[in-house]
Image (cartoon, rainbow, N blue to C red; front, side, top):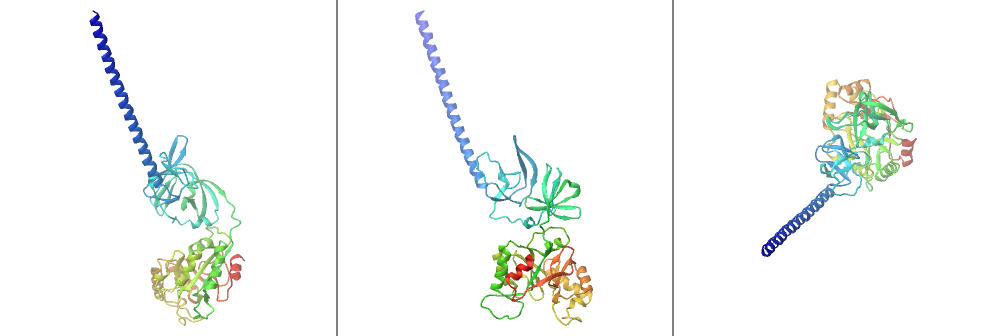
Length: 415
């Protein structure tokens, strides 16, 4: 009996040892598995964090169509969509593996980290942000904002936005550094903003030929020295003058936009040596419009984001064609010849709708023909400023000359 008990005890001990060994083995194995899983999870988190860190940049553009989100207590809520190519500035933030969305600077929404690509600079043209906002509106939830015919945002919440341009019942609102047209029916609340500081008049200044230092070959009154141009442009840059496009001037005249004090349109006539203005425009970041005689000069040398090209006629800058004054042909040539000239010059200039009268001469017939030819505004002389309501086909300009000083330019701009 004793032997049997001993045998049973031995068996139980062996079984306990076996069970204990199995338990220890399983515990050890599971512990190792957990450690491996934790290690793998840490490695995955590290890889994910590295991936998110590589995606982040102060400036980004959208690389694929994506939703946008608003942050809430329980996570992120989708509020709209954003299209490929749109650009944003991001808030600086500490990146972790949990950073699935980047906060867009200046706006209360986020974009997924995997929807963005790094860029060196923003190319969205936000010039309108120099206009004075006229109103603040609340855009209704569900409104779709479109830019150039493409859906860019569908608002899933009522959204406040500033209005920078008004055309009839359409308001152009600022959303993510772009202007979007919004119908009156899509707006539920309007708050007028103070625009009393906006300018009431704008000078349009005229340059002709620039001659670099050391080149005395031009002694005419419409020749400008390099030092003279630098003096004028440095004043404009240093005082923060807003140099306009012809389209912006047209919108000002029509009362669609409000512009700041020290707004000015810089124009250059003809095209001779005009390419030599470009380095100075780019250095001082001054926008200008070149009224080009397209039968005399090719558009190729005049390419710059700071230089707008508009028309001085294709082959109308010839004296003695019509009676009176210098005899510019726009006053009397038959309609077929004028319309062909307008067609050629607009074709060369990408469809411009801005025109400058050769010799600054015009009559009612010239204006009638310009309108038929697709032009929407025309510039002359006059030595006075432009105001709201100015006749779009009789826009006055102030001619500068070789003796015009920086102080004179200042008086034109600020007086």
